Picture 1 (tube, helix red, strand yellow):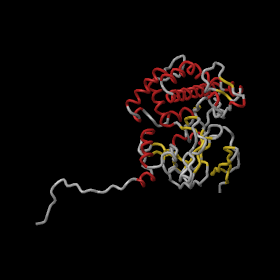
Picture 2 (cartoon, one colour):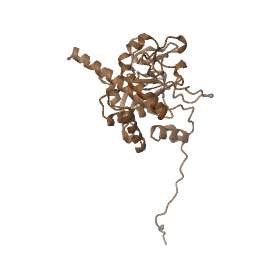
Picture 3 (cartoon, one colour):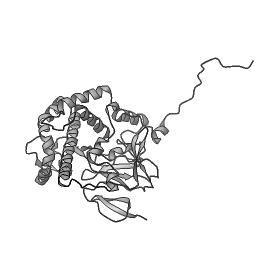
Picture 4 (cartoon, helix red, strand yellow):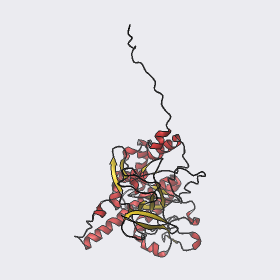
Length: 369
């Protein structure tokens, strides 16, 4: 029988993880996937997670690190929830402590580090985005919108992580050309840019007007140039925009997906960041979710079984705050506008109004005379 392991996700509580044989404490860099969580493919939904065995309520299903993350706060200069820009840290950098380290080139006030040590460690990644931010942040915010600026900045951070990853792989191959990891655990799931490349979302997922608008932004603000040397074609960057818009997560201080709602619903709080999680993006939506999710203090997204999940059952999250959209029409309208699909989960189908059958004659009925 498997022993129970407690993984320290936050200092204030523990998350139960089943399916392992030793007791351990999660290091800050851990990317955890429950051994009973399998990726399958559905003809309609595409990729999805299903339980191969019973997963007990309270078990941790997944802890996913962001491939790219950015702050989403008002007045970053005075906001205590502004995150450290070092992706190996991602912890809040409160302004009242006086320890914030800004960009030495003063690109944007949204970019800070919790210490000079974090800033120096993040120098190579930030160098990729710094020139772009200095040139385009103000025009985007002034002439377009804060949303479009954030969307494009997240794309830039995806490309920055990609560049760091490729340089690291090149250096490793140069130093150890015949070494690679052939373990089954390593190849069960896609990692890094390969996982980003496999995300759902394409130009066919969005309206023609939306795709045309995004292509205009790509050609004007994200071209391959000395400002942003990513080496990709405009069509590939546009595809990445479609993938990001279909798969990015908002980070909130409280859990998303709590259901049934408590008598006094609190909501999940105010968004403070946005991120792309390569593995977590496989999770599909249900208005009757069996999984909740909440970020930890390192920006990792932690997914927990909110009830027992039976073998063969799909593991689903809520794509939005269920306390904000409670009735069927509101939920479906929101999903249709934001995520481009109509929800037919068990809850939505059960709340549909019954359709009365009507008889329609296409010809005179036959009568026995």
